[in-house]
Length: 223
Image (cartoon, rainbow, N blue to C red):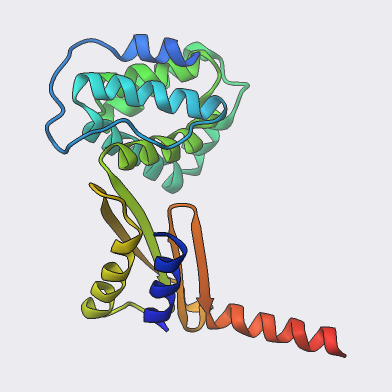
């Protein structure tokens, strides 16, 4: 099943934003953690413009890794603390109060000055409700700029190392020259068995759960 999924995929593929950037830019250093190229991820909407501005500021300062880590910490905090998540979404909280509160909260988790300034811009422009989308788009930009292609493998139970290696080998055929694979595995018992592969804009669902649903639908249509 895993081999067929991989083969199928391989065959298929042979504040304003400028204000955020101004607040972020202070010092230029070399980004040496990993090779960086111009990201190919399209950015749309308000969240896309802010994410792009933050990416460019982080690239100039050599802080992409740190900013990426900062955003993940903020994301974790919002997921674990409903009050903080509500605070980000609530438009009724005065801007000054939000800026002051963010300065204290972000200071505790020790984010960079770039990240701190960026969140202040979001607060001043009433765009904190865009944070989840901004985080997602920023991470996509970082992955793309490093020449990485993110793939998510979903199975009903944890795969053995040799099974993951087999999938990775098959997915390598999807990559272009100079790209590398960033593989993530999710375990979702509800799919019962089989595998779901998401890579780039491709979604291959070969789960048993989906097959059962298709069979049920066919039976209903023939009644």
